[in-house]
Length: 322
Image (cartoon, rainbow, N blue to C red):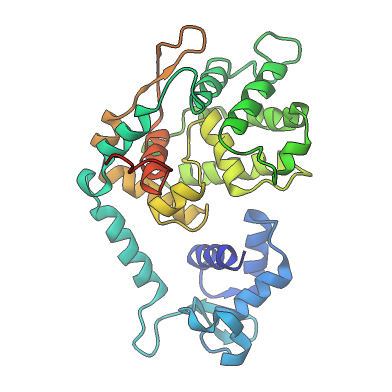
């Protein structure tokens, strides 16, 4: 959790206008990450402060500071005093590395081909296709009770997709729930702005990224009292809207992201823009449940990026015959 809070604090610091107060940081977290406890956040604020006594920074003292206190309760972004690189410089170096990736570096063709090699109408991961097809085809009816393509089928499609993708393992709270627990989630899905259904990486500007992030908050809240992880929330969004990669262990390792945040979404958008032609060329048609054959509906760009880094991040067997 410490690393997650730190990354989110870095995101917050980059967002706020200088100078900013500790209360503004707390307020920002309440809006964007309400699950973070204020006590833990304040400990991270102290640990991220460059001119705080070293002993008070605790285990975070070895990290590059994020902020500098200019008066009681008021801060600015750390400016790299002492010859150390600034947070902005670190971020710029990382962004340049992402932008420098080309199809060969990212193995776009090879990783997507490896993912698709195991695709079969009866195989585990085809559950994505059936779930995505259902929600995309019946956008206006997924939450209607009593309809053949309505609430019950939507819950079943979403539930089986999540099970196929590892979200109902023994340690999962969802394993203790029936599929009816997904009713509020489907209701939340039906309530999102219509533009969410067509949102993809080619619209990952500041407005698009904020829309992804705000949709994630709505989905997360709908799972309560289950504590929905970033993995669960982004898997739902991928399987329904196709607007964001699933931030699971493999994707995060392959992409080099430690958490789901607006900063990491920005980097996903940058990677797409640097490799748009190759990614667009790898969009494959989904499989139809009835026939098992390809449909006319294509995987989204976010789905392609998800496949790339799912394989690159170490999906078991991905390099067995490389």
